[in-house]
View 1 (cartoon, rainbow, N blue to C red):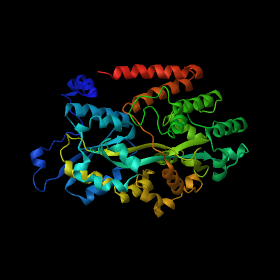
View 2: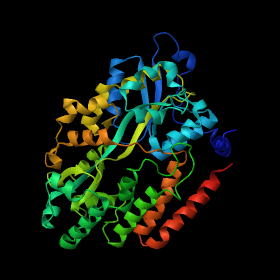
View 3: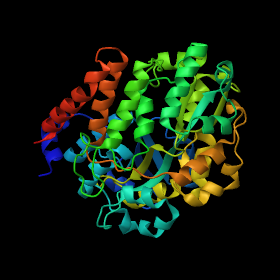
View 4: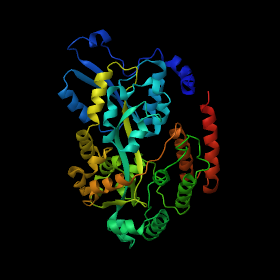
Length: 430
């Protein structure tokens, strides 16, 4: 028995009698009648931007009704794992974020193999590394179809850079901060001259620096845990500890009310901006439009996020569900998602699409955001995310938050994080 299924038996017994999302009042026999409406249950997490596209799909397919249930992405993944174990309330379609893909590959028997639906014919449409994230090492099982990727740009306040006497034109900013050492030195200078913090929080700085490494917590070839001895992890950690010691962070947890206030009141000068966060920045600080600009992060490329649409085996309408996710991941829909929600396509042919390449944004001083993200996307080196990626990342971020709050000191933080990871992984064992 898979160790994760074993762990979940207790939970399954507790929830077996509870009504779960995804259950329909329409019986299977009624749904399978010719001409009947097919009810498809789709699990999403907030910010996917897929809802308007699904509305269009329903209009074009009057025999399909899609019922959307939304949960935070860690909650959705945990709930999906539980329902797969119980067999009750399994959705027809589930959106899975990259941090959980290796975990669900271990449970591939609980999903439909999309290669059986001729999805393999689409392999050449997607970034090769994105496709590999969804397929097993033997190439025999495809868990999901790729939606977006998360190329990371650097949004910055031009006015704060100017006040500090620093270069403020995008090309000059990039040249001035070509390394993370330069970034920290510039941040120190900006803070001393303006009193503004450079970054919103330590977590995001750590994510962005680590996101440029080809390996993080696991060896990409054999899946071995390497978090404790990977120099790239320690290098990112050390840079973040230096930022803390210099007081460069505004200590505003991402997406919190305090973070929104910090955006509105200009409490920090830089926001690391994977493409999917653009609309969030604009909605949280509309009055700051035009004060922000955009350029590349040090070392140019990095990726944060990206998801896949999967078909759990316990769903009702596999063929209709596949047709839906096949449509949602087509080029036309990926371009539309970029325009409406900032989600950057996972199809390299679209990187040079005029709709994307000519896209500018007045919020960022009319920066050519489409061209910037296209250039980043073309240079991304994928990083391997192992089976317990999310668990380990959560430990690291929890410790970073305590460092941010001065609960844990910078000198002891690394050892504490490594100890907690060891404890958490031991508790994962059956």
